[in-house]
Image 1 (cartoon, rainbow, N blue to C red):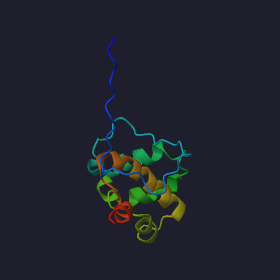
Image 2: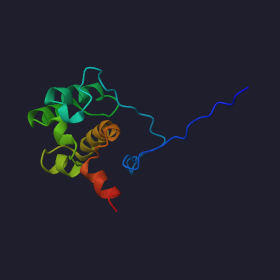
Image 3: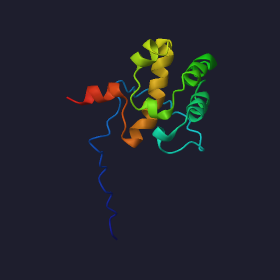
Image 4: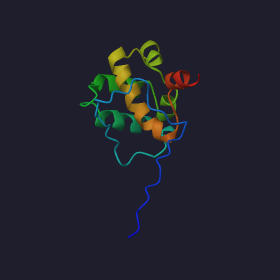
Amino acid sequence: MSASITPPVVVSPSVKPPVNADPLDTCTPCIPTDLPDNLRKWKRGHVRKYLEANMDEYDIEQDIIDLVWNNHISGRHFTSMTVGILVADYQLPRGAATSIQELFTTVAIPQGKFPLTLMVVFSS
């Protein structure tokens, strides 16, 4: 009888969980299947669809999604977007900005692209 060997799990050093990752938060974002795999290729329509698919779970209201749409924010912008930028430059409420950044961080991490705030935290 041969024993099966389970290979070790290797975690890339470049992929780290967000600092504020809550182990009790089991919320997994809904990613519509027709969105491009690469976040940087998302047009503003893709961003809108992603936000609308998650608006109930992340408590994002339609008027906030409309603000993102009206400001022509695409996936390319979210790879370096911070809560501060969303609040100061786009006039989003801090709670909504935090939820939106969390949503895009979840999509960006598997691609190895962190929003600016996470890059600063992990750079030291």
